[in-house]
Picture 1 (spheres, rainbow, N blue to C red):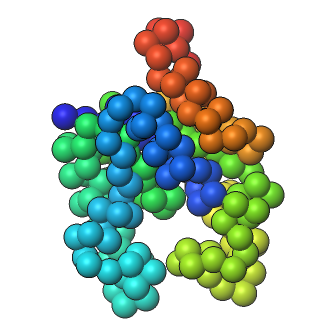
Picture 2: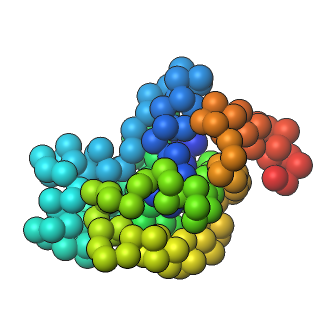
Length: 175
């Protein structure tokens, strides 16, 4: 078993929204790594960050991603920071990884500035989001087989782009 698509990208890229629509279109299940962790731990991601810290969360995340890559046969969306872990990047090799890219303005608009996302909480969420994008962009690109800019697309159009990118013809063309 292996996912038919693995979606990566920063907060606000649309991984969950697009992932659910893509799974529906393909007739396969959808899951995301954060939901797996929350189910395993019986608490919210923000609570894990607060009580256990980011390092402990990343260990849980790596385990959840590895398990999902081995057991999930649908669409899998990863938390935005998952590819930053070297082990997760190694686990992603050979899988149909699609990077859903989002720019600063669209990302901030989508996630909002008063968010419960642990890594965006703080004094200046916009600056934090900007720094996050700068740090993660090269990692996302290196981990993905395909990249789709989502800023000016509705979720259904992103799904169409993902399907086109994952088509056998696109793979043969080297896209």
